[in-house]
Image (cartoon, rainbow, N blue to C red; front, side):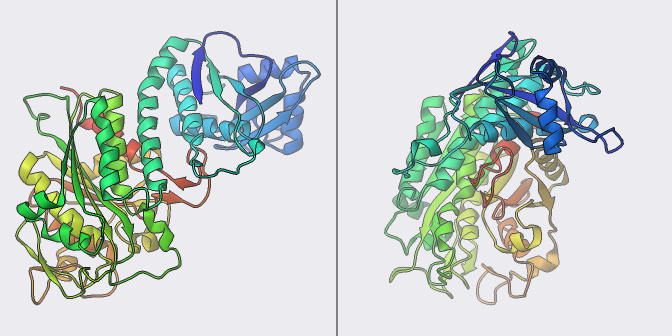
Amino acid sequence: MKIAFSDSAVSRTGAVVVLAVETSGKSKEGLAQLTPAGERLDRELGGAILRAVSAARFKGRKGTALTVLAPAAKGPARVVVAGLGKADALDELAIEAAGGAAYAELARGQDGAASVAVEVPKGTGKVKLADMAAALALGARLRSYRFDKYRTKQKPEDKPKLASLTVHVKGAAAAKKAFASRDAVADGVFFTRDLVSEPGNVIYPESLAREAQKLAKLGVKIEVLDEKKMKKLGFGALLGVAQGSSRPPRLVVMQWLKGPKTGPKAKPVAILGKGVTFDSGGISIKPSKGMEDMKWDMGGAGVVIGLMKALAARKARANVVGVIGCVENMPSGTAQRPGDIVTSYSGQTIEVLNTDAEGRLVLADALWYCQERFKPRLMVDLATLTGAIIVCLANVHAGLFANDDALARNLEEAGKAVGERLWRMPLDEAYDRMMDSKVADVQNISSGSGGGSITAAQFLQRFTNDVPWAHLDIAGVTWSGKDAPTVPQGGTGFGVRLLDRMIADHYEGK
């Protein structure tokens, strides 16, 4: 979908979007209140918009929208009223939600183009007009994502026709500039959504590495370590996971070093991702029901690739290294067995009690290799690591574990700013002792019961030394079973915007 910005008055033909705020229950009717542009259009249409608002009891709540069809003999074919929520709570997330809700309504029609009028609602001025227009456009773009490349028999009427959206706002040039960096980040989000949506016969370790290599044309330096190289280096934990599959593993290193060359910000920020392109559980095989979802067990790696694309596309002035371990976890005559002991890249030995606790083995080698080679100022890893985090947090928050309070705060604040929420979980010596093995340095699952997401994080912490580190367990938020205002059903891309925001706010520039 093409998005443009214009200083001109909003079109009076085709589909038109106007904005509305939620009024308090103390108002006369408690119905949505149109912004000035909406009020002007309503007067031109003889009050048709407000009559529809009243008939539908539309409140203007955040992320909701109302369509008014053919409101007058002359004028727009459709008017979509998008809710912003309460005026005194208006922020960019509410505006993004309005943009997404408006797109969802527009996509149900046959209009090829639509216009939206953006003005600051009465009673608020917290968000600059340019940022408001850019946020609304971003929300519409994020909601416009579709993964339907394999649907060959879709009827034409089932496909969205909306090809362009023009945002009419005073100061269009400033809005266009504000949207440019947001648009680049959306590109990264879409790339991640594409990767996690692809089936396991399309995305496997070698092809995932090839997808990462596409970033070279944006200026990202790409290096791919094959199985032979990793054997020579001693990646025993990662290779143990991969040995049951006919698909050879890969470790991909992505470098975007466009920040300061000296000073405190010269050391890179390191972002790592679990790239298990399909997880059968190995010999500890998963139940067949729901196993098809394990195509997106590479969600952490997908986020790292999408983030690197976003940083390069917006030309971030930052030093960032992305590392992803790509394997397929399959049962076979060569597969790793429960009870096997492997030697990790760090030299620590690991007793493998459950081959379905494989992501932590992949990350163990990646974390140690990353810190040894790049001496990063901090490390953040993302992984669809445990079902236990879903028991704790459902599909609302991702789990955050960290050995550094400042890093944890930076991540939490960034998550709140972009609507990708984190909840900090504990790390404690008592949980760590539950990972002690009687025959090796560490075992890959807990000897106790409960706390599975915590003990998984404790395992990872053993491979971080004193580097500021955070682990994001994104098992519950990588895939969505239902639509949200800016996230259609399917792959979410959760983490790309969060990490881009954290880097922009704290680790970019001089």
